[in-house]
Image (cartoon, rainbow, N blue to C red; front, side, top):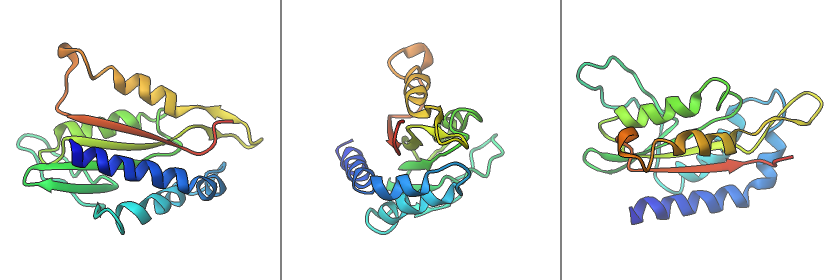
Amino acid sequence: MARVDALADALGAHLEAQAEQIDLVHIHRARSSAVQSIVAALLREHLGFSEEVVLTPQDGLVTQARPDFVYSLGPGRGIIAEVERGGTTANNHDLKDLWKTHIASDAQHLFLIVPNANWNEAGTAREHPYHRVLSRLGTFFGNPRREIDVVSLHVFGYGREA
């Protein structure tokens, strides 16, 4: 966990340092890859994450899960990092990312990078995914009845809120 937390701290500091650059590209109708490329600069080039790797297939599950980024902590151990934008909660991408991590045999940790707000054409916030993600995904932790095979979840918000 210490290694996972150190990587999470580095990612959080990077997002904070790149806040102005992220705000410039996180606008209505922008390409979703714009924010991902800013995050990739740190994850891939400085922290050693691999990009777009197909996860090890599971017996009985037909999946070609390909997270945005993967970091190996050792044999059968790792971190999935996903960068979301417009469909974070509207299309349940946050839940899909948690499920992807849950069924992955080689990842037990999730770094989920989501917008603090998404914008409409007028430039006002139409939704606030970050706070919804915290509430939605938080329900899977702390109650044995709802436990999943994800050891840790780090949620990072990017972009301005209003």
